[in-house]
Amino acid sequence: MHVFFTMLMAFCRKKLVSRAYASVIAITVMMLCRQAMAQTFQDNSSSDARLRVATPLMAHPANVPVVPAFSRPEAMFTDPFGMTSWLRTRGIALTMDNTNEYTDAISRPTSGHPNYKQGSSNAGQVNTALHINWEKIIGLKGFATHTLFTSRYGTTANRMMGDWLAHSSEIYGGGGNVVVHLVTAYGEETLLGGRISIAGGRLTEMSEFSASALFCNFQNNSFCGRPKAAIDNQYITSYPAGEWGFRIRGRPLRYIYIQAGVYFAERGIYANNQHRTGFHFNSSNIVGQLVPVELGWEPVLGRQHKLPGHYKIGGQLISAPNPDNYYDEDGNPYALSGKTARNRQQTWSTWFEVDQKILHHSYSNAEGGLTLMGGVIYNDPHTSLRNYETYAAFVDRGFIRSRPYDSFGAAMTYVKIAPGVSSTDILDLSMIPQKTLPNHATGVQEHATIFETNYQVHVMRGVVFAPDFQIYFHPNAQRNLKNVEFIGFKSQIQIL
Image 1 (cartoon, rainbow, N blue to C red):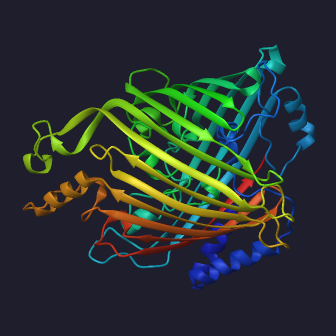
Image 2 (image 1 turned 90 degrees about the horizontal axis):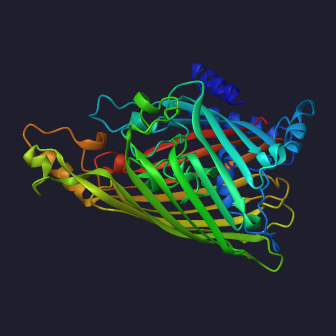
């Protein structure tokens, strides 16, 4: 499917048809396709960990170990040759999906920068997840393992326009340009009917903390996956990077959870020299620890209990060497002294996030309705690039009665750059000759806003296609760069 639409865009350009007209053609073709029951974007292959956070206890849980049911997303091949059913009855869940993201700049880049250009990009990935219930296989009660592989391809267009803060295609990067990249591989023991969950192995921290399956209803990296400021520190792992870690979650009440973890900070977790394939298991790169804690409340509101919400507050302490964004070891601005930036052994980050469905469409499926989202992430101003980020978004599924499985959404994020980073930029620009600025900047970095909207078309079983529009206000958080607009699309094909 993604190949078809990439070829369509290329054909339209070759015939000198406008980009906007090419997008209209693509949307029209998709709207004419047969519709069947389906979900919209849910980040299916990697969402099991998130769903286990976002699922309240049953009304009367048992007091014995139990493996929570594995998710079974709607797929193109529901049960090929009976394979899926045969595996699941034996405790094995195998899922596979493809996500593709295309973006095309419809505005020209800021003049005076020969490396900037107006262009387009395509990026994507194939995910394969394997979940095994060892209670069914060898009688090991409450124990399961979860393994996730990915294969990524392509590039992202925002860098062509001078922005390095938020990819216009979230899928880009981190996969090592290899056929198989290991994301996670860990074991999980669930006790007391789901009241306690203990996990350990190769984990991705931000798949469970400050996480939501709703984020990837969008495409821009400022929001999809997780708000970008949540992984501002170089040691925080987010999909597709994993590290050694341990996490425990408890549910003292049905709709309340508290979780904490210890993750071992590794150098270069997104770099290819050590982590290209994800199979680097030794401890040679470990330089410290990350300790996150999160408290969540998950009410299901409304008379018919069809309005789920998630309210979470959390933070983490990071004990690993991080460079100061302004001072050197002597307490002077390193931009002036020319010395190495001061290393800080302790730093931190915090978050508060909310999503709440406020309206359920009775003619839609169980996920139909209007959900509002909002949050703020605040980081240590001495070591961060993004001092804080705020966001607001909504997703409305099934608001058109004749299209009960389509969805419309919009998101806006605002990022404030840390004061030390801005001050360092000012000093670097004042030097004669001017120094090269950090973070690929070509001017003073201060703040940036990104707006995105899309309409998700449910094409057929397991296939979703979403025309997308993005606008960057102050790309790369620089006032000297003019606003940039992108059009494109995101597609997802759930294969198994």
